Length: 261
Image (cartoon, rainbow, N blue to C red):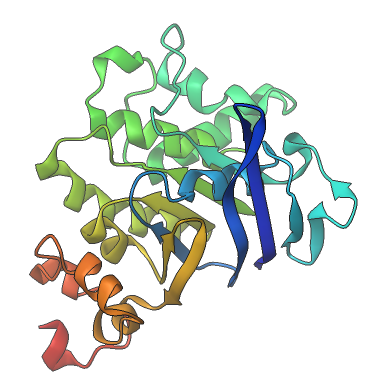
């Protein structure tokens, strides 16, 4: 379980501190997928960076499965948090093939176990037979799958994904959003996804958080968010891009059949 308790974060700019997160609290159950949704500059990526341990908190605390990661005088280093991160640009190593990219963080394992885990992950993400290819030989969607497999390889307790669909063309985004959800569920991982795209959030998430100016304006299920937005501004934001396409409707958790059909 991920627990953020009134976390605050600021950056130094031009000799002063600029607040980017303000008393933000949320909790995410093990095995759930959540999405932080908001406009550029609202603090979404800063939440991920704080959870990953890349940024110190000004206040509040972060716990994962009851273990204090940040706050109360504690700051666990990123490599000891059991948190994986999939970056916006995928950050694949261009000189390594697919298998080596996926297995990069598994060097402490013996070769047989490392190869076994790499094969299992490539099978999970549908890239069996692509082990020897280099990143430049792959499509954007295939590169995304390699990045996901690499993030899953160390078996993190929590996976953080920063705008995972931003480098894909519009036609591929919705399809891959549903595929990403299926892959995360198949892997049994807890995940927190950041996006500015409403349809992606509704396709992927069990819980959605609307972030506005560093504060969590609403934290709800996709069904609750759609049918009971907390403010008129949230209602306008989540319905902006013909959000309720038929496939996205299927992910309105808790909706009666007549609504999702």
